[in-house]
Length: 485
Length: 104
Image 1 (tube, rainbow over the protein chains, first blue to last red):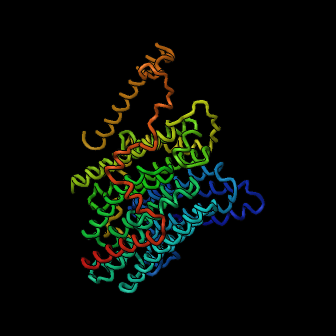
Image 2 (cartoon, rainbow over the protein chains, first blue to last red):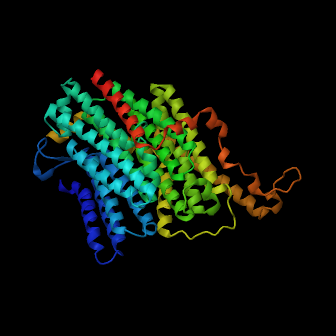
Image 3 (cartoon, chains in turn yellow, blue):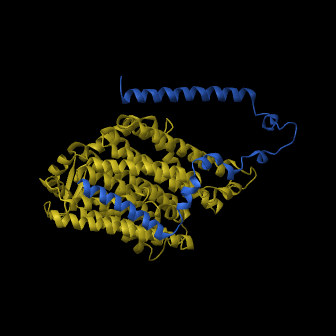
């Protein structure tokens, strides 16, 4: 089924088409990027009926059968995540139209390359291939972090580069250990062979890969690169980082722990502990930030902590809550970072104490921000409530202490988001301050994201059903059966 | 009716209540017209005070909470020095490797 590989191929082609299109004029770059993204989105959506009816669609590259060739595996988890991530990138690109005024060729090419890496990691069935796509994603992210070429952007990019390279090196080392012991790189074949081995080298390999993925997800204590990188990047890129790339690390943890390796209890405990520390630590640190983007960055660490705790429970409800929170967090943070992008674009600073005097309350931005904030807290009628409710229920079934920690973290989320709203929109607000007209290309993504947040919040059954389907695709035996036969 | 349909129904009722609330608010607003200017004035024991003078100082927002939870200490650990950050990562990795190798 060659059709399935097309979303990745289309984005790769778009990446190389953009510099060609810009040879004569930069006018059509945005059109080319949007066309590529739309096509990729439509192709991914067209996979949904097939995946829902068959459960899993496997494409063997160049006809080489697994485990010898590279398998591309599409299941509800990978396809729905692909659709969500392409959509977030699409909206960030629409927002970028008026935001990015120079070096458009480099910018849009790199954004497309980030998506190529993301889709590759999510859909591949080969662990080395996963590393290659992770590198594509990482290298383009480093370049995007340094995009503004300011002192702080370069410093953040270098930090991100060094820590990110350490992460991918650890992943590669882990893969080398696995190949050395099991003699295969195919994830389904690894799943078969790992079941009968008690070799501690496999434990070491898994620990190295998980550490690499924790760094990519920004979980405490592997999170240090994240606030700097988020603060220094262009705001639409930050929305992609927070809504897409950070979640890729968590997806890899999910896939490797539950489908490829065995979800041993000690690993789940580690996930819960790291998750709980991130959940609380991220929220506490967000409370004392003066930079709006940095506050949202620490909030992302906290929300990833929620996902890790929920996934670490290993129960059906916990996994559903975790997977759904990945998608909901993508949407919410996509919205909040785009709002922050507009605020920073208008106020020319991201310091919340300085913003308030320079920024006049704008209904689109203000209401979008407060809706995003309330959804992040987990207030009913918004999508964040649905996943957080599942997380509360799942934690309560296993350990009420975790529920209390999750509730405290949510209360802290409310505290720092209200503080942000107060400082940006209410404190020192100047009623007479001039207000710049918001371009439609900046308003549209916000309105769409707000609509999705409310829609998924008002009709939670739909998203819960999808998250249950996504969790079912983690089934190890079904995965092995589909890839190796 | 159990599970998700019930949750959906609850949401619909929630929305309905919200809608009814808005209708009442809108009708009341229409009846009374624009808000009187007196309502916007701040009562400060007879003193004239501008709204911005009564703002909560942003620097002291959650001051006590920050003090009790010792968040500044957490902040101090984020030195911005790359080698410190790498040390955290190596410590975290060491714990993960140790635990997984012992128990595998």
